[in-house]
Length: 191
Image 1 (cartoon, helix red, strand yellow):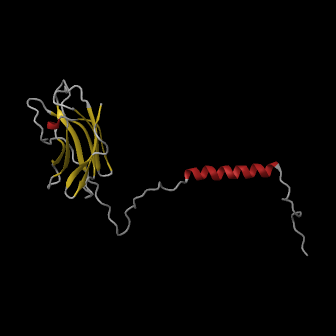
Image 2 (cartoon, rainbow, N blue to C red; image 1 turned 45 degrees about the horizontal axis):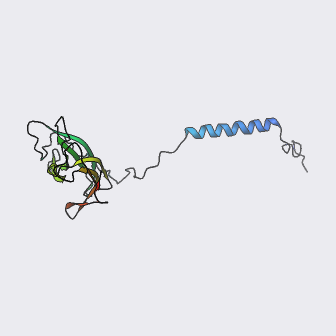
Image 3 (cartoon, rainbow, N blue to C red; image 1 turned 135 degrees about the vertical axis):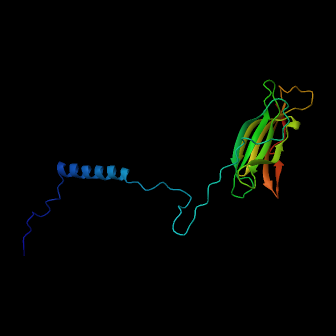
């Protein structure tokens, strides 16, 4: 029988040098792994062989759009806007809150839906969700999950001054069967 060149079980007793070597190796692995990370996870597939990525379509811009709002000598002002695919066709629409630039008082808002024209260059108004003639002011506004959500401030009677709306109402619109259908999640309440 041939004798081992190393004494039996020479590695059975740990010495500080063993712990130091193990700690150094472990620190090296941890440091190296922090530099070698996989790509960030995404829900979308990357285009590969035989696949095409859909072109990204920008929402229509409000610049140059003629809103159905009579402002007389002053200009219409886009107060807020948000975009989202409201009709499920894969192309985003823009929803704009617009009022006349009155300078004083609280002019009523109009809420309009814009889409691109047939030539894909000019935006056009395709729906009026809130007509300024109804004397509402938009307090909160968002486009989420294919719905337009608003909090509207209004007036209980025509005698209430425009500075002081006294009714608050939540409303939402969803595209259904070729038009926007309004639903009110809760009843109007006094402010």
